[in-house]
Length: 287
Image (cartoon, rainbow, N blue to C red):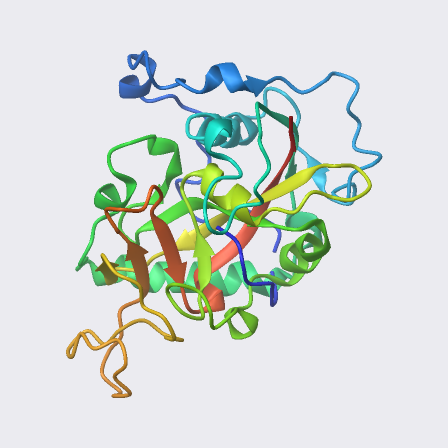
């Protein structure tokens, strides 16, 4: 997804489970897992990032476990035939996509962001009761997206422009300045399918490159699953009233998961900055 710009952020990894690099058996055995692979082109060996706005970040080199994991998440779902299609899309026809580089933004982040995020994840993991499980939201697909099942924490995508990329990666996402016009209110939007996130990516005018942020997102133990829009809200619905417009002070759901049957993509929305943190950037090119 895309939308909001930012607040604060950190070096270091998120608690246990971040590493990865494995390929689950169900993916190894699935002949259709890379059904869009023919649209994915390898990066040119000559790319050195000199014309890229990510030059201040640390590039993950070939063979890096986290890079492999991110590329798998991206390639397993990206569908160039659907890029440019939809109400929020850029309207351009795309034949293929080429990942140019993957960057770690840890060195440039405000160190308080990860501390706030880790504290939120830790509190959620201790609660135990979950209204919607991570496996429901993840639909049994690529397990690479799962960071921590106890707190419903996922790796998710967020599309943005090259102008907004730097502020987000340095200071974090900021729900306060998000648009009121979003289908699920003033929140920070993410997607598991980068094809959806691409709708919010604006090509850099100088290089023609696009950017998708890979974020750690904690959906929390109480996820509000909805099959309709929630226009105008600035926080999740009340757990007791289930009323999206309620101004009561009862406990709130921690996040919203869009499960609208007529929509091609699910959306993942959080309303507090501490529930998400930018971790990596995928630099890619549309063809």
